Length: 380
Image 1 (cartoon, rainbow, N blue to C red):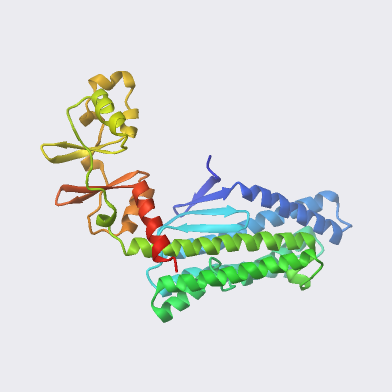
Image 2 (cartoon, rainbow, N blue to C red; image 1 turned 180 degrees about the vertical axis):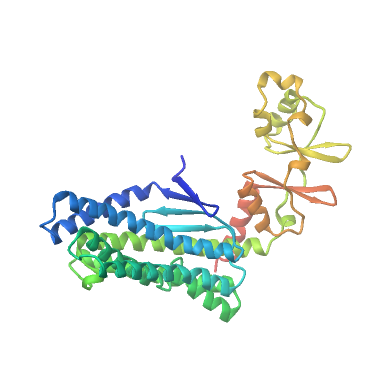
């Protein structure tokens, strides 16, 4: 079951919401309803509800605008963007490629907080032309504060917050190493996460941190949850950089299996099933004829044909032909292999040189290679 619901498409970018978003939307709406009811006892009951719903809806539209600013600038810089997803703690833009230089990383990172500052200013301007005691004026006032807080919070120098991306860009520009910059920014993210968790725990025991940072047990729980999420994200970033270091220094020839099983193109699917698939238990077979690579045969192609037709269907008729396959050169780095496995949703990538099959890279073999290299190359 997919965890995201696609609700639209803007500028070629899928817009989705994680199912956790509905929980947060309800919680924020209830919180604002209680807030408005306490601050404006003279309002009719329906006015507080409408104001709370409007505030929540405009808040999430603000989040979408924040993420859209990242995505549109990334597109302008030549970085493809697959989607934007809103979830329980905000939003994320799925940018499919890393920035090619520190300047681009800085610009894509800083544009989000800038957009939130601008949105905060717009809502503040609207408060000047509306009655502060009205539902609309109250909503605009809170949205100005929330977006200002969002801008400031996102500039905290801890990855994966926007401020962490800005920090990474600065360190990248100084050191010339994106891997070192990411490690430093991710470490900063963990420091920020532990500070938030510490603040949350202290709030559970009665500490308060002023009007904007707040206090109380509910606020403390939120700080702990947000800190825990940032801690998880920062540690995931460290794991990602380790993965990047492994795949950027390794090549297809380092991982490929050379002794691929060959099957004749002319045999029936029944014979393929009995003599090859069941007997060896392997998941991928090279279809060849007189030494020429014709295609690949896997259980997926076999299942696509009705079993009653197996005796009358040849492997050549059911296989994925070589002309339809994506393959890599033996000297290709593993980043290219990973991209093919993920984008094409396949389990094997052929390694081809001069029209000849050199070997195959399976998903399991690749994961095992990365795990072993990561464990021993970074054990210290």
